[in-house]
Amino acid sequence: MRLRAGKIRRAGVSALAALAVGFVAACRVDMHVQPKLKPGEGSTFFQDGRADRPKIADTVAHGHTRTDELLYTGRVNGVVVDQFPFPVTRQVLERGRARFNIYCTPCHDYTGSGRGMVVQRGFPPPPSYHIDRLRQAPAGHFFEVITEGYGAMYSYAGRIPPEDRWAIVAYIRALQLSQHAALDDVPAAERQQLTSGAK
Image 1 (cartoon, rainbow, N blue to C red):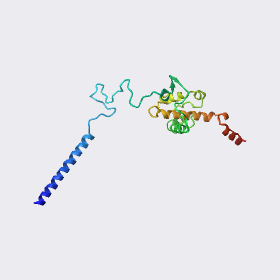
Image 2 (cartoon, helix red, strand yellow):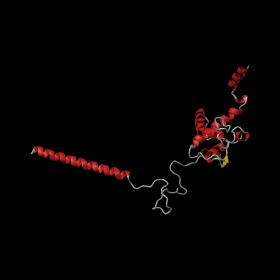
Image 3 (cartoon, helix red, strand yellow):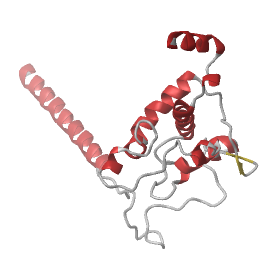
Image 4 (cartoon, rainbow, N blue to C red):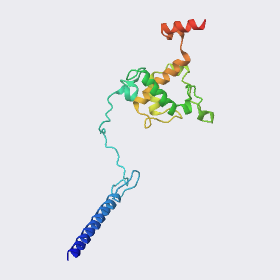
């Protein structure tokens, strides 16, 4: 009798376990195959037939307030300026060089002369950073061009965050200086080394 009761208990436990597994599997399927709309899909629920909802006018997403005009536009009081929103350090220049090498060299090449690989294969060349017009352009101009695009160049605002765009601008300034530096631009201690080594 005890053997039979043990078998019945085990069978009951097995049945409960199987039932629990069935419930868990059913929940997983229900959670996995739930009604939803993916970006870009149509919808019969909304009058405009789109699943994506438009942005609500006059609202700003949490964490996206852009109160620093210089940082986000390259302008101060609506005027393009020749200043940076933060100090340009070696770290900023290295970050700018890395981003420049990724995003800019295909057209502008590593020196900024406008003879990148895609230009060598027939794409219209961008102007060299070393022409007078661009050497005299304010830093905000370069930031604006990276942000909004210019001519055949499309906007990089969606690919490069504002801080990295400024780092690229700082590196462009370094490239310009590398091609047009005068001996007077070198600090006095290093200048003496240069002049004594040249003799």
